[in-house]
Image (cartoon, rainbow, N blue to C red; front, side, top):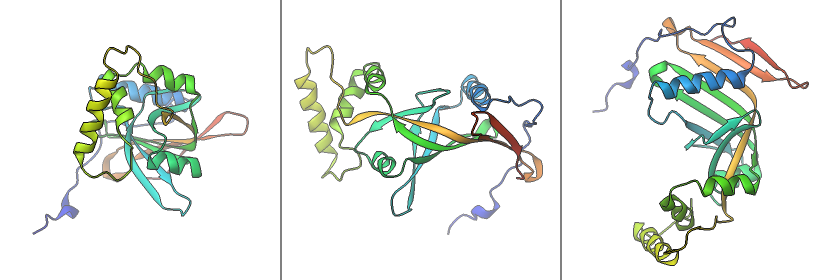
Length: 215
């Protein structure tokens, strides 16, 4: 019999989030929360759910890793032939979600995505472990393959091809995306499901407006 998941619940109340203590700049607030998640040694603190939408209006989500951020936006890397990249090519609007369970916190971001300058993708590609670089050449991401042996044979062929080669070239089909947020919401779990939610919205003049949302 299936477990009764309707009864799985726990009470929140570790911390609070109030306007007077939150930074007026959501990028600085995000930096603070991310640093606290890293300092708490949370597994994969930079993991985020990326949601995209195709031209038929159908959404899809997956976990990717944040690899950089600044006032220009949040950066991740992937195969440009993957489903997520194809959907971002067709519809550049995306949503990101961080869920730091032990801290009872979420951060939600929404905005447009753009490809990174090739030089930025090049620099990051060559900072990766060599096997990861070969992996970017090996996998036709999101394509149907016969079995895992297809990947293993291809990887072995590439290992032999680049034996003694110091610099592996970056595939043209691999690079970074930057999500430029227009809204950023910070969520802190509170008792009785009366959670704290602060929503920052980008204004036409480049400033951010912060409002409290009902939980």
